[in-house]
Length: 210
Ligand SMILES: Nc1ncnc2c1ncn2[C@@H]1O[C@H](COP(=O)(O)OP(=O)(O)OP(=O)(O)O)[C@@H](O)[C@H]1O
Ligand SMILES: Cc1cn([C@H]2C[C@H](O)[C@@H](COP(=O)(O)O)O2)c(=O)[nH]c1=O
Image 1: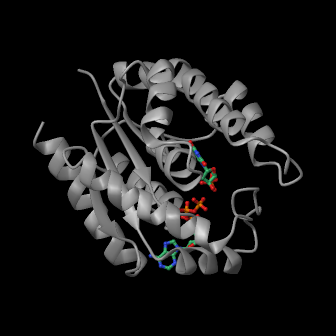
Image 2: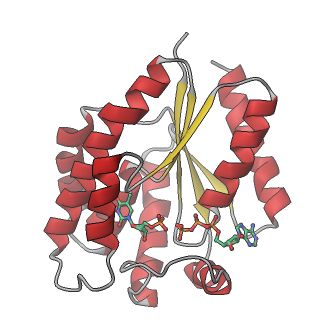
């Protein structure tokens, strides 16, 4: 039986990585086969592209170059890891996917959501997640969480202005309305336990409701 492809989105510091780790343990304890992955990255070539995109020294990077690099990394990640894992019956939990490009490059950078969607259609051939959970948070709170987390590297996107990160949130809220059949919004400002309880409920409803 085929598996599932679920993606997790949100502004920087919303709690995506934390919730995916909790969800992976929760689903495995229920007997499900789970593969967690992330973007940009997930496979060797995409991780190499990640290091180019996120390098804080690469300040000269053009917006369209950035968008094309994210899409290229996505193509390799999708074909080499995501699709085979879903076909093998796994639940794939992906930390960011195409919606991040639509929001960060399309909306916040002003390249155009539909223009970025077109580039990504070339990359993903319409292979969208069946469920996307959007962790909504005030960007200031998310960035403050990151600053408290000393182990986390600061990447080139983190260094954008606060107004850019507010545009990111605005872009996600618009996307959640546009793709309401796929995207479920969760209030990520609550405690980790509260956010996880809501996340697990949404995921189990989707799995049981297949
Ligand atoms: N609900 C929460 N309440 C308080 N702190 C949280 C919550 N969720 C996660 N955190 C903490 O916030 C920090 C960022 O969490 P996490 O790395 O999961 O966010 P993220 O959305 O993956 O961020 P990024 O997109 O920047 O990688 C971590 O230190 C994490 O422990
Ligand atoms: C997939 C994707 C990501 N981004 C941005 C969003 C974040 O600022 C970084 C990734 O860092 P994280 O800590 O691993 O979440 O890259 C983007 O702008 N466009 C994308 O498609």
